[in-house]
Image (cartoon, rainbow, N blue to C red):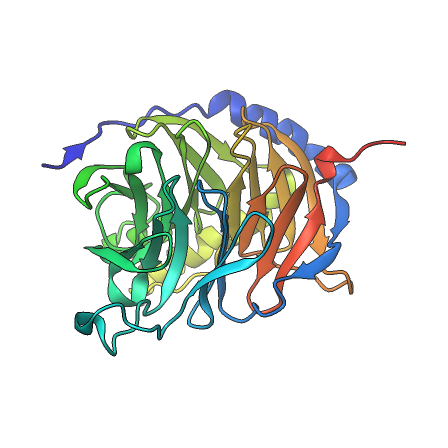
Length: 339
């Protein structure tokens, strides 16, 4: 039986006031951040996600090729799950393990979860890459593991923003009401598409990709809303206004939804709950209370703009990726030691 969680408690006023105040000074505070090096040179076109699983391994997803590549804590490749893999049984013979994936994660037991949008499935694998089960989900686009073997899924089609499945693949609860941005239902659901992240305490973070004001919403694992982290600085207003005009235009014309993403990547420092978001090549760092601490323009070692579509926050560095440029390692600017 599905458990539907009620109204969301939003904590916006104080957060927005602080964010706006900090935002007015951000033009002076913004600095450049250049990558130290490119990592995983075999991955570039099709890059979708870089995740540190709860099992400690590193998961790099590029779809359709090379698929999901897994590295151990020492950086050694230990597994690859591609479009075409050696079947583990006659029933799977000739069938691709992954059709077209959008996101991935792994739990503390090493079970691997892949949001396979091409197959309308959550594909679940054992720690050694053998198919374990599949969960039917319409157009899954984001995934994050939770405590006790649960997994949260963000979709493009379902009424709620998040569906949570238990360790046996059963739908145990749904939560998150889409924001009312457009009157046309299809367009409004499209505007509420998002990516997921989680922290060590089991909080879930939903990053709205298309809202005019970049927003990350925090939930507890049961689906009760905490605060919204929003970027509402003055320099963000022209982009937000342009997005709203385009939404109005598509509302009038009734076209198939086709909008440019506003928020392109999100990550959470699992230890502290601090949030990092990317708006193409602008990287924003927020503390756990939602106050913006810093803004950066990010670049490759050669000086090219790096428009991020995935971020991973590690203890002393950041891993940021772009399709098709690849994956890059950055020094964490908030961890720099002054000499």
